Amino acid sequence: MSATADEEASDPPRVARLLPWSGPERKPCYVITDDQGGPVSRLADAVESIQLGMGAELLGHAHELLPDAPRGELRFIAERLAEALGDALRVAESRGQRLR
Image (cartoon, rainbow, N blue to C red):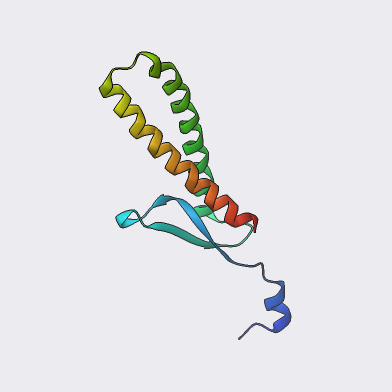
């Protein structure tokens, strides 16, 4: 049995949500969802929250470390900050897409 035009009009819009993790070859991952969100959307929300929290902690650590850090530690913190920035930008892109 197919849906009528009235039933289709009342269905919530389905959108592709950018997830906060990458697939093989670092390609973006998406989930098709509606505004109510399912288990994958809730997991993505939790991962985004963790990523942003870890980025904030890392930034605080970097501020403490940078004045006296040896070269090896500077490289390590720079790599971690680059990862955290990438995560934050992916979260911002995903949330920006959902605002439209």
